[in-house]
Length: 287
Image (cartoon, rainbow, N blue to C red; front, side):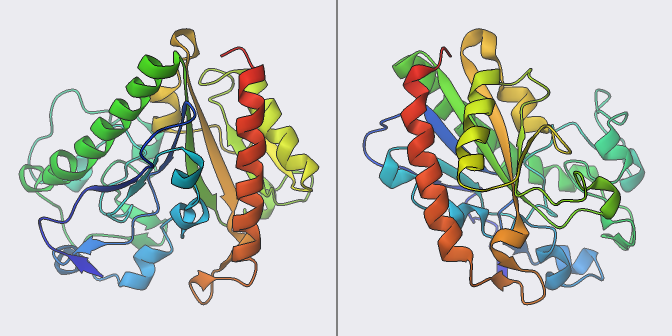
């Protein structure tokens, strides 16, 4: 799908009154791409779709009914990656000069996965030729900045209203390579805490325990510990906690058909149960 220049940079679903100090975000579930992208690349829509966190926002569509706002991306991750610092830019992608403070030493940039990605994987470079940052910076000013401005306001409202805040940053993961499996197994969920820097240890452990009692295989910080959103907004010292949740696509998605599998609705129900139990334990934690 393509979009007009005036398409909104994010979607925000929320109820009239927020009942809990919890915000959900889904920065990689966007599915829309400007038509201009397809003039800059030889890749097809189907290539970009496999780079998305397929339907993660739909898996948590119950959030507003439970009293939690859900902020989700509109634009596809290949256009602008909302889970990157806005200065994680790759200078090799552009004809013109970048701002002097860009984070070209970022490992994500070096691998081709900066805020404006260079590639979808090692075999799929996105662009036919270099870009002009003077033009492409619109991806930041019109999409990235508004998304994070909205997220900051939601978290600050939690702090002002409840004295604490919990951000759950939602993602999905494909089947991992064999050398990344955990004891030969594919995790169902990976909870990322930036190795304990972004949220209370008890918060992550309680969330993991709830999921394990529901018969899911859960890891904490392995192999994903969280990226920009988790690290940037996770500040336990000021009572602002952030935890990344990676969900295995094998639980709900048909990769070949690029469509929900027969297990999608069942996982949706299980996630609503998980969230209900998670909200139930929050008051017992010192955050």
